[in-house]
Length: 275
Image: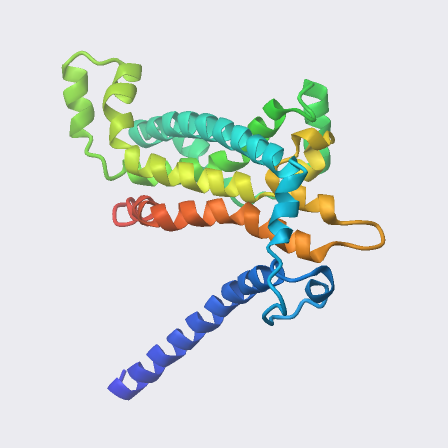
């Protein structure tokens, strides 16, 4: 490839990345500017600056207290799903990567299938009702744990490929059993990928709308993302409050992501060079 063709190829890639960036940036700017408008201006859905700044929109969002309850519900479900997913995924990944038997290979690919299988809500609701965990925090925690386990196992298994097996041998020589080997040696070494998995779990649970909307019938248990539904009426909607609510909902996750994004990249690429 000539230098000229290489240059045009680079320009094409940069133009594509610029367009993809706009796909993300423009909706976010739409949310920001319309959250500062009155109900009439916000209802026009235009990417223009507000005539007057209406900071009262944010005061109205926090005034009824529902968003605070939504924050607590989201935090409870996120932390519960994080603990269960990380614990069982790390143990399963350790067994799959270290044993290398036909059974563990089968289990690994069985979990990988979960990455492409869509979630069917009606059977999920019937199963949860049969187990008596429908419309409960426990049910939501188990639901998210089952949905996020396949990717977390895939991520952690790739990371464990970079951990030398000689550490296992040293632990066994020192008298470590399987559980002690895992909790005393392997688990501390898995901290980078655990941080990555934790962030991805929190982001996935926090941003999900469909799960709590269909699986929680009690409005008092709704997560913070579903709180936007409080401003949607049958005949009219307060779009200024909807945009303000959306901005309030996503800001904690955006701050968390930008503060810890290097850990996400480190954990995602840790096992990429070793097959």
